[in-house]
Length: 424
Image 1: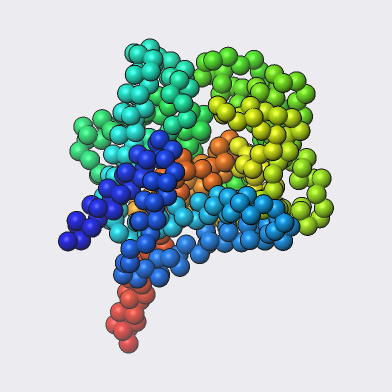
Image 2: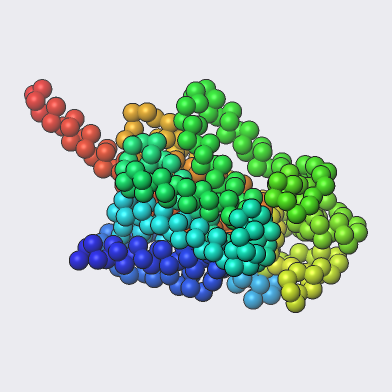
């Protein structure tokens, strides 16, 4: 019976990942709630583990100090976005109570394989076999679909290999590794490339000497904060390589005056207008932001097929979205929680004496957090349904690390008591 229940929840998770590929918000949310709601043994203890992530909602509540006069609809809309990271990390935490580690990791890998086949098949259906040599053009021909399941699956395969944990037979392992790597290639997404690089770098990062740990974390923090304010002038065309090279130019913050500049570097323009709107407020706005606040672009911009907007409720740059809606308090809370996770879990990951499964889940936590921190500049990662699989893995890993370390501590205490008894 327990195996059947595990299979059901694994299937729910798999369907949720596939639904997120098509950006089907209602099914993804519904499946996440379905995973969370049914009672399980010690459910309260599992929900309690989500407390550190529930703190993320406090800045949104404080944002009402200034934003209570804004549109009720826009306030609820912002509450919805700020609840997304809590919802999916909680879903991951609850899955840790319902699915054993081996089945969960296999489900992640299978999800990556299916998504890789999906994106390849759809790309070929749009552009023919030419999509295999020009995945970037195919990616934009398809439209807005995608989920970072392939890079996450790739991470699961690489880290289980690193710590000699056998999920699949050798030939199957190689096949799944190749398929998911090809899926990352077919997406031709800078966001997914960043996620892949975060995990790949972690594979060797535990070899860094301890003296370098905090300087590296400090430099990463500086990088996360200052990157959007650097401008690199590069000519961009339709190739993926030039798109990557022009990424900083595209998101660089600036007050662009011509319609062409605004369209080519819209993300940077909307970020500039959001930051200017934030500075135009008073001290309460700087501290608490304003939930439900709209960003005035000062010009009408064509967004989507039938949307010409001057005032927008959401930004591509997730950090400025947090700043505008929840002020400096919100940014500090997000930075404190997620950089805190990196610091604390780095110790267990880098500890060669720690158990491999604890080190793996510690690496997953660090990789997921780094992925969210960096891609939050580009796709509002913390509040994007597309990134649900990353947040679920974060919650699942967080729960398992704490449970495993708690069991290890109890076992060590029991051994100490036995030794003490022998000495007596």
